[in-house]
Length: 302
Image: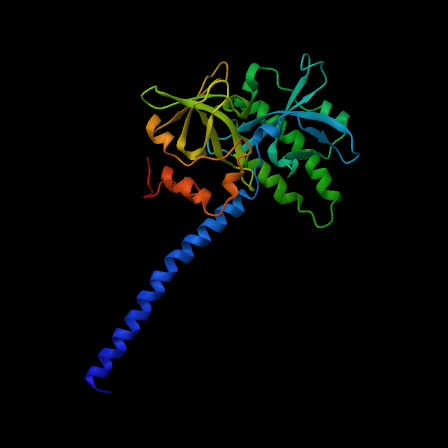
């Protein structure tokens, strides 16, 4: 082959390689957007979980969901169940590890199942301190997890192919108190400010992805008496939560200016279904400069 022929073939190969790189970027972007949509899947409002009935295998209502305790990363750690009482007065509150529940969502509602009788649930350790501060106590958390794990292990022994050993090992690794009680019911409705103490709005709701992680907080801004209010989906990882130790009150801190928040992508209406549109979640992530896992990126980052 002549020198000119070699050069021509080399140039042709380089052109093909450049074309492959050029087409790979959009394909990777489309794959990432598809993954983000798949992870959200549907609009799962945390507010819809509150007061959902907890049903056992005998189809009996044994409790109601009162609250959800979150990790700083947005993972549900405990569900707080309510039993007895009249209009919430005199009710017994029980913290159950989130993984002990079977939670499904359809048509905007949650179905919560627990393989336990009313009598068994009545014997569970009860929360006694205000705002569930017992969850910051290692001894209480250990007792609560051990109680529900014992029931899970007994159920696992009767389930075909169950591996009770791995379940117990996982429970042992999670028997730690939490550093702060982040109540989802307190996050919803919390004021949102920036580090300059400028009011930005309030948290209208929290949205869970298909792995049960809180992926977005919906911030309502503007409007009077909820008329004309705009809804901004903000990635959970962008918030810093200041939690009152005694009253569990929440202040959500978001490091943007009011003008930057005004320019953020909006969702139409209070059903937030805009987030399910092609590429919309990625648009939100890019605007706030994070990826779906909450890592900082080189996005538009207000």
